[in-house]
Each structure stands twice: as C-alpha cells, then as structure tokens.
Image (cartoon, rainbow over the protein chains, first blue to last red):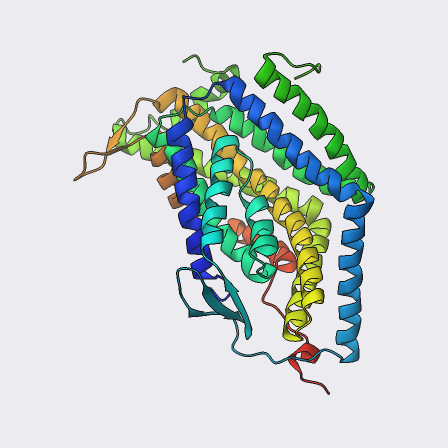
Length: 241
Length: 191
C-alpha cells in the first residue's frame, strides 16, 4: 500500500468505470463491424505516428538528452553533489480537495488536480472498451507525462485502475449486453501472445530498438491504410487485409 | 452449435469426470474441478517454461526501470527538476518494456483457461445455477471461475506446485520493481 496513491487510483477508477460501462452500453450492437475496422485502422495510424516521431532525429534527440541528464545526475550523486532529506516512507495523503490533492512520497511533496485523472481515466477506458487498445500502456504515460507523477507511484496505482476498468468493460459486454464470446479464438490468440513473449525477447537483442520501431511503423502504416480503407470505403486498397 | 473437431477428440475424456456420481450438481463440481486443475497445471508449466527462456531479458529491463526510478527519486530529493523529468521519462520507457513483458507472459498462464471455457461453452451454454435468496443465476463461466479459484487454493498446497511457484516468484522478485532505495548521498547522509 506504500506505493498506492488512493485518491489518484480512485479518480482513475471512477473515470475508468464510467468509460468502460458507457461504451459497451452505447455502442454494442449499434456500430457495424466495418466502422469498428475503420476506427481501429485510424488508431493504428495514430500509434504508428507516435512511434515514427520517436524514430526521427528530433525524437531521438529528446531521448539522448534525457539519458545525458540522467547520466549527469547519476555522476553528481556519486560525487556527493546532490542533497536532500528523506522523511516518512511510502505514500501519505496530506490533503483532499476537489481541485487539488496533496501527498508525500518518501518525504517529497506532490500534488495533482483529480479532474485530470478522472477525465483521462474516462477516455482511456472508453478507448480500451471500444477498440481493445489502451489500458496500462496509456494510463502510465498519462500519469507520468501529463499529471507529472513519479513512476514509482504510477505503476501500482494505474494497475488498480486498469484492473477495475477492464473488469467493468468485460462484465458490461458479457453480462449487461449479452455479447457472445469466442473462447477458442481468445485461447488461440493467447497461445500466439505467449509464443511472441518468448520469441520477442530472444530475438530483440539482435535487432536495435530503433529498427524494431521502424519495422512497427511500416506495419502500422500498412495495417492502418488497409483497415481504414476497408472500414470506410468497403474494400482494402492493400492485399491481405 | 457443432463441436470443433479438436474438442470432438477430447470430449469423451473431459465429460467422463462429469458422470462419476450421477448427481448433476456434484458431477458438475467434480468435472469442473478436474478441468480447472488441468488448465492450471498446463498454465503453470507453460509460464514456467516461458520465464526460463526470457528471464535474462526480463531481469535486464526491470533492473533498468528500477535504476531510473531510484534515480528519479534521488533527483526529487535533491530538488533537481530537470534530472527528475529526464529520469522519470527513462523509467517510464523501461517500465513499459517490463510491464508488457509481464503482461504477455501472463498469457502463457491463462491460455488453457480459455480452451477449457471454449469446451464448456459447447457442453454447458444453457446451464444456469440459481443463486439462493436472489433472482439471479450463475452461468458456466461464473461456475468455472469459482471452482478455478478453489482449485488454485487447493493445488498451491501441493509440494510440487509450491516448488514451481517458488521458482517463478524468485524470477519475478529478482526482476520486479521493489521499494525504492534512495541512495545515501541523496538522503543527505554524506560520509
């Protein structure tokens, strides 16, 4: 519990529950498969664009700068230049408010506006429930980059939010909307994921990170164009999709 | 719903455990307990194998995340905002890697559950268990989940299963993000 920021988890979870409940209720059975495919294609494009930016000289420069700053700080810690004082350990919420929550973590003070995680939780869970993309991979950067919280507290807190919104979404689809589930398909997918989780780390050490990202960008463009045209034009302009 | 050929082969063996006593409720519990046990054992073995192949890389990435997380806390304590933002970003990147690795590895544990549910869907789709005192009922999925949890609690007491879990947990703990160890320098404890 020392790493769980309860108000942050609660704000993310409330937004998440709303998004994960409303999307199945509002869209299940009302949006055609074609439209889903089209929207999925668009999202793949957006993810591809983010990754493409990461591979550009500007994106790489940002990462290099971050590494250099981290390295410089590490050196300064070694030389004893850094100073500070650790207070009480773990997370301690100091004050609750509608627009500001203050807490300390290992003696360091943090604050955030709970409206942001509420809104963020809603949209991330909604996207996740609608297209199956989202959850942890959006909650964590959202909390670290937008709400500006440390990774230490974000990892545990966002896991709680992901779990709650995922359960809500699955429950609403299956039991409120009665959506049929193809368990055999899920099982087969999981076998593929498990195989990939073994093959990926074994092969990725031979391929630099940037080339893996470039490979993904190419695939994202291909899948993005194929799915978007298939969804919105009725046919894929690229073969195999 | 016509049974998939894969299940046509397995069906006589799996359904055998649902016909042991002749009492419908008891048979459902026994059969599902056996099915859940099989799914869990296959899952445990496959996640164990997956970890054996990937633990080095897994450990590297989690250690990297841990290193930058510790540095980011040090930077905060030292009041160095620029270093905090840089190290927090790198911690975020590294955490993303280890998070997804953990997530995908969990598929190695869960896949047999969905194959089990797929078979149950052919056999028990229409079965409903009324919940006493309410107007609600539990379908085969709810029944399976409850019995799966019970099977897990029972199986984890077996020595062989405990040994397997112990090895797995040691892999996880070696690579997991632990409590932050703020360096003595950043704490202000200069020698």
